Amino acid sequence: MHAHVVLMLAATALIGLFVVIVAGVTLLERRGRLGEPDRRVEFNTYGPILAAACSGGAAAVHVAVVGEHAALTAGDASPSAIALLCSIGAGSSHFAGTDPALAGFLPLGVLSVGMMGAQGALVVPRIWRSRRLVLGGLVVTLAALAVALLTRLLAPSSGTVQQVPYTDALAIVFDVALVVLIGLLAFGRPARLLARLRVSPMDAWVGTGLGVAAVAVFTVAGYFLAHAAH
Image 1 (tube, rainbow, N blue to C red):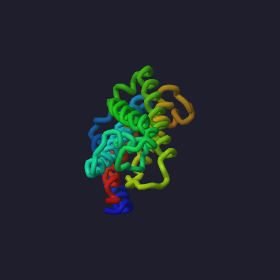
Image 2: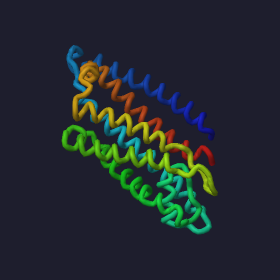
Image 3: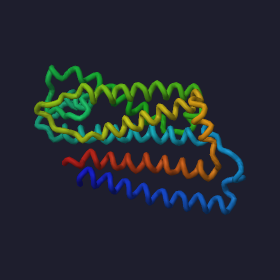
Image 4: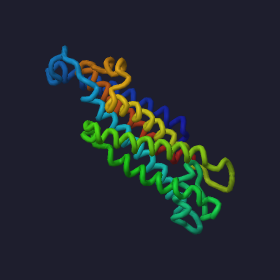
């Protein structure tokens, strides 16, 4: 399946989910399940759900990339755990064997796996309701973003390597979005934007549902994109 087909299907699925979400929330509002329609919901109420979704999406996309590297390593004539970690550290490249010249990618590979686990642990919305834990999440997210960018910038441009699709770019997008969300949750800045995010219960439900759906759809699409070139 080609990459553009995957993205077209993802967009179609997201539109369909948007219709379902709006219809479901409208039904809940008509039945009075959302509370008073005149009240306003603070961003601190629904923001943690979006933050957890972005963190989980980034971790899941990294899992897809690591899984693709693992599948390529299993098909090598002489599978090597060191070569696998070096490949993960190189981002879009997979090395068929261990080479001393590639040892510089090993720390990045180890850090990538560690960040994947750390971000996976931040998928619980309750974590993002504590300012101290939010700041910890910021450290993890910035570290994951730095590692992801380094693996992209330092990856070899040529050589006898097999290419892995650029699904890690999706994880970078999730991390950037997460940094913005953390800034709003932890520091309340920018204040003008935060004020605009005080919305009605219906808008909060629709926006949160759509945000979570978008992360889920494009995370699944990232998994298929990792296999699109094969």
